[in-house]
Image 1: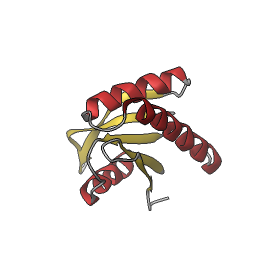
Image 2: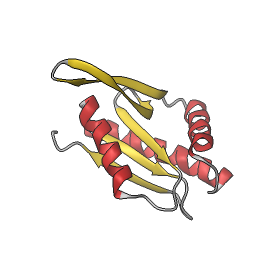
Image 3: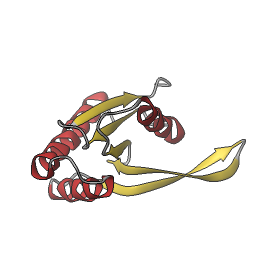
Image 4: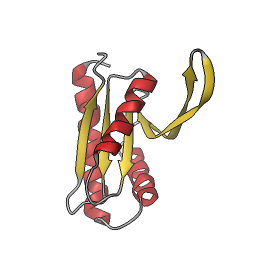
Length: 126
């Protein structure tokens, strides 16, 4: 995916998240927002997989799995949270998904604050 395509996808996911936030506000748990965001992305024909799992390897040995809330357009991980504010630990976790999946960019969306928060993340490897 080109940078322009990545920007377009990220903008569309954020538009979907805004629609969900306008309808639901804050105060629900993460699973409600994840389900609602999946519905909104489906309505807008945004290709996505929920609870995407990828094996995690250590020295070529499968040592478990990592799960991201969404993999959008087969290239962009999207992590959903519902906290009062984004914390560094949440940003670090989302960055680990980029590194583990060897992907260039992703999104972290927080529905728990008084306003919708989102952060675009970039893998420094690229």
